[in-house]
Image (cartoon, rainbow, N blue to C red; front, top):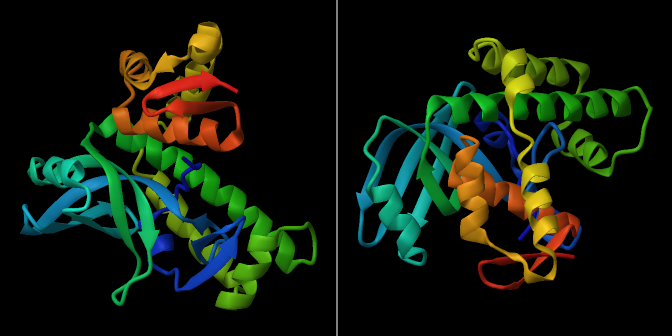
Length: 249
């Protein structure tokens, strides 16, 4: 597994360039995000298609719409999507892919969540977006060193006005979260929580189901735990000797 990107729909929707980065193809956004595996949370507003063949869902955040397309290649995910009636908040972990009508997301996990999960996602994505925009602005001033920022500047002809437009988008999204600072302060450091449990287990390792239950006890959805585990695996903190078992590296 790999670490998942977190971007707003309004940013991913502007991605038209595919680049090769760290051995894999990814969508490059105007703010310099490299999006292959993506974690998103939003409002499921519509589902179209055939539940036995494939479904296309529209998942909205305050900046735009993600198109999520599930197929029979992932029957469990297809069934999960078919079982959620809009409107509802959902969390999706999936692969971003270019499409004729803009980027789409091919889900590998989807679950219904509550507003608290959505609010945490909005805050964290806004913070990550702000960090990328700072790097982008620095490169426009000829400062810093960021390959993806350089790629974005060249591909999308980024100007200071572009940076401010994206910054305003993120700020509008964050403005919908009551007491965003409280969300930051109260948020669980999920990667640290999971890593502590894996460390305590030593060479025996921990079943992924146990880690999901641990996260649930802290108010975190299963897909949030999966996204956090993907990051720990990508960083080399732990590994998966067999499907479903997490062991300290």
